Length: 190
Image 1 (cartoon, rainbow, N blue to C red):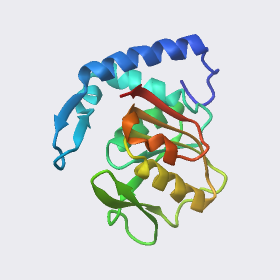
Image 2 (image 1 turned 180 degrees about the vertical axis):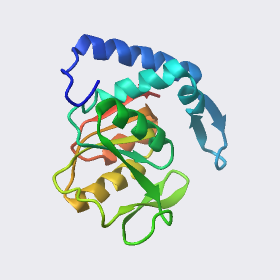
Image 3 (image 1 turned 90 degrees about the horizontal axis):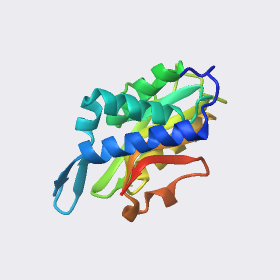
């Protein structure tokens, strides 16, 4: 699929999403008390290491915004997803980095995690994002702070989040409620 490809039928998208969901459920590795006691970590590494799993996930995410101008992947597993989706759509990809990983000047946004706080950054110069249509990607939606912070960074630049997507959503943590008015897709909800 490229950004110039015809929009796929709803049936094809639903079939591929169901297949991706089965693979994600089967291949996800769960670890209790990681990275801190009381947190249950969803490790998607086996999904991404499986050729069929990775390809199906990438195709599902790409279908969320086939007309996006730019794909943004959140540090760090979002980089893998973003690169794959951007290559599929024929767009560029922008890495949304953890604080301190980019040279200044940067735009910075702090946010809360279920086990602490952090900050995200994107370059403040060298890119004109004004009016760009962004597909925002991350691996897991938990409390929602990471995606919300990334979306806020792009709003500062004058870009528009046309869609956000994740592989796995932990619904019990309520992260969806912290998102903006952009469509949010989850391949699997737990």
